[in-house]
Amino acid sequence: MALPSMRVGDVGPQVTAVRERLVATGDLPGSAATADTFDTEVERAVRAFQQRRGMLVDGVVGSQTYRALDGARWLLGDRILMHTPGHLMAGDDVGALQERLLGLGYPCGRVDGVFGSSTDAALRDFQRGVGLRPDGLAGPHTLRGLNQLSRAVTGGAPHALREADRVRSAGTNLRGRVVVLDPGHSSLDPGGVAGDLREADITLDLARRVEGRLAAVGVHVVLTRGLTGDPSQLERADLANSLNADLVLSLHCESLQNAPQAHGVATYFYGSPNQGGAWSATGEQLASLVQREIVARTDLLDCRTHPRTWDILRHTVMPAVRVEVGHLSHPGDAARLGDPAFRDTVAEAVVVSVQRVYLGETDDSTTGTLNVADVMARAHQF
Ligand SMILES: [Zn+2]
Image (tube, rainbow, N blue to C red; front, side, top):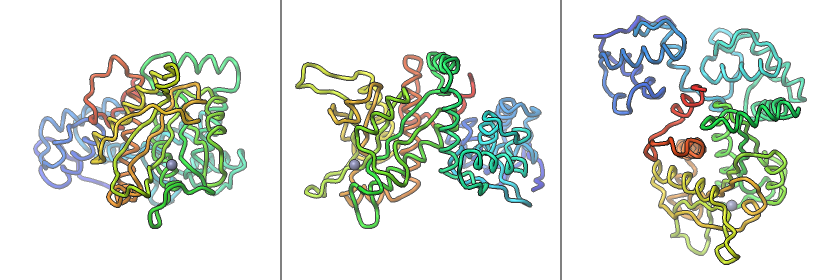
């Protein structure tokens, strides 16, 4: 698509589109999205973006800069990637996929963020190599395979393990960390049900939205279950322990059939006030971050954090929390949970809270203000 170049002084809907994308990349504040003037503030933001991308820094939005800006909104897992000859898919998610394939030894040409025929060939080789159907589709299945294999490659040999430990102790970076996502319930146990909404489906969908975003910043994500299977709480905890995961996030929605008026979000951590002080302080900290970020970004009622001794919290040796995202038994909350945009917002809150665990003392961001673009930017600083 050949676009006329945009520069300082230009006005119009094209400029608004540029502004919106610069807001998405974090180069302009959210309030800047609605104006339609290419002013010096926009020029500064364009330069910052070009600089970060290693592009020619001229403050002008030509077709190359526009393509890069447009692609920056896609995180790996946001959409299914495939080879579409004639109009190639492009974006940061394609670049992340290419990096992943290259890292595993599947040559896909240059990491250029454009899904061409060599990326297609490398993806199919990878799929064949790990026993997936070689359909050339980078969807949730294939991405999970990529994640798990990336983990196996970095975590398999003792030498590589020490490398991973160094990365983990390196501070605020998310890259190389292992996060276990535990979508509540299973194909055999739907959990709460409201009309055609099933808790088991909502939690899996939510987990995949979180997974895509975390994978894009270099976190190794492992899900305790997929579409099939019915692991027990204990098996889920064992999986996290055997992976030596950094964090466990268990995702559920509350259902109180006898109290349909009850609503809101609550987060639980390991603690037993009545049993001699068993308590996970890091779990409590993670719970409070998750809770606060979700409350700040949604209109769910704040039902606060609470200590519990459930298996997924008690048998895991790393910080673990279980979040009950809304009440499926409440019509208002159920409507929210049925909305993919709402689930995206919750996923974003979860990703940011994970980042904040590692930012620790250095984190002076106000709750609800960091977004995934910030997390990406921080991840790429290291
Ligand atoms: Zn549940």
